[in-house]
Image (cartoon, rainbow, N blue to C red; front, side, top):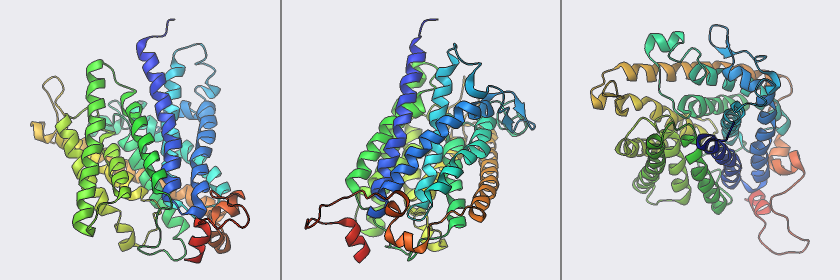
Amino acid sequence: MELSTSDVWVMVSAALVLLMTPGLAFFYGGMARAKAALNMVMMSFISIGLVGVTWVLWGYGMSSAPPLLGGIVGNPAGDFGLTGAVGTADLIGIGFGATFAIITVALISGAIADRTRFASWTVFVPVWVTLVYCPLAFMVWGGGLLSADGWIGSTFGEAIDFAGGLVVHINAGLAALVLVYVIGSRAGFAKGFHKPHNIPLVMIGTALLWFGWFGFNGGAAGSAEEAGLIWVNTLAAPAAAMLAWLVTEKVRDGHATSIGAASGVVAGLVAITPACASVSPLGALLLGVVAGIGSALAVGLKYKFGYDDALDVVGVHLVAGIIGTVMIGFVALPVDGEGGGLFYGGGMDQMVAQVVATVFTLLYTGIMTTIIAVAIAKTIGFRVSPEDEERGIDLSEHSESAYAFSEGDASYDPIAEEARV
């Protein structure tokens, strides 16, 4: 069988999406405190290793094989080790799917920076992917409960989630919130307590994320026309969200920041993910504006409600994910002149489908992640000791430092300065 153009595009897209996880490592590493930068990078990189193995052994089967438990999950033994896929073009799509599972669980790590045992994270990653990500991917994309043929999808309508508003961003964002409550806040947590230690690294990570997102959203495009729409929307929404975030910052705080620009870009990318093939470029701009403003306001809620979401995973991924998923009910384009969102006269059908799928995702992820997180916390423990947290998780967990200086060097040492402050 010859390699088709579409096969090549999916392979390139898979590589772009895989690059997003190292990009996320830079993004999170720069946002973290200096004494936790390497730990943040490692939490992303170890996710590639753990999920890569899990996906080959049973993860893919659980997300796509014949259904079990009434359409909640695929059969983990359906293609154990991918033995049945060897020699087929299916492996291209299987590899593409693996990169989504990797980035999803890696996103969670930013919420629990500075205080999480690395060993506990390595247990959480494969368990969560197995019990939360794979079943939800099956329910939305693999013919399960939320699909057109599933019980929820056939009853309330099939929700639109082209690239992962439900499966990736709402899923990861709520899981992050659960872990934050289970693990608890860092010592001294308060407004102004934590500042990013390397903003240029954050901007590099943002650039890599935006670059990879064109494969993330566009990899499943079915035609040149659809691919073009996805590409423009993946440009437009984060651009609008960045501007909206910066304006919100300027009005609220009196200045626009680089971190705000980076966070706005990510919020816009998150919001357009489920809708990228279903809205016009004007609709993408609207999604971006709402996500930029909404997420900029939402990141401050952690101080009001007292949850220590270190790197704003909840405010960006959960909030923008909900905005992007639910707003499809307003701005979805009609298909062949029928349906569409409320703004196109499509009625409430699509809105109901989007809301029901969002609520179901929140409930499923919340319940399952709580069970996993509490089990780990009560057995091996999730949190480092207060002494190790104060000393720095890079040293306590990895015996390394992101910034090494020779003896007698008078150069600025961010770790020492951070400890002094």
